[in-house]
Length: 262
Image: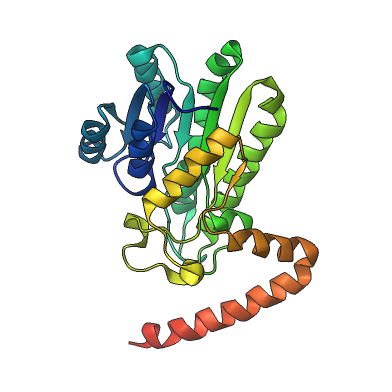
């Protein structure tokens, strides 16, 4: 799908990848851009940069997603590209999270994609054309050491995007799933952690990769190309791959032990 003259919605638009996506869409000639974030001040700042509009939303709430779509429809008569980009890191570990923590990260990292697809797909299918971009993570294809909630929800996000592509791809619906490792965003302000093994990318680099994927109608967006190799290793021999990850887990635990002893 070409970007020029398209009507775009981006969630998580106040900073990081979302803000970079809004700027990239503007530079590529998008007709309208709706900048969505729970941080409305940040969303307004981004909207001012791209001559779009800002909408406040908690993407884990279906009613807020419906409101976003209504506002976008009022602005320009429809939505051509919906980037469901907002996400959170959640609590580290496993036992450290209670049921409310799991419900929260599930709502933001998974249900937000489901609500967006549920309420924007009908208009796209009626026109016979539309595009969804769902932001997941390399953790959704591999795993995330030390963060059960993040790893599980990002895997679910990949699976849902794949299902939508399989089910509606022959009906004019394009789908791309963004799966980066470390990106310089608010989430990585304290450092990239184990995800930074292949380097920290700038958000604008990631955004440009996403727009190229939309133009090419490419499903997986892997700004860190090494992820494709890791996926292949995992697919070729999962037991061996798990063994390797267990060794990394031990190194991770050894690294954390002195910090926890302080």
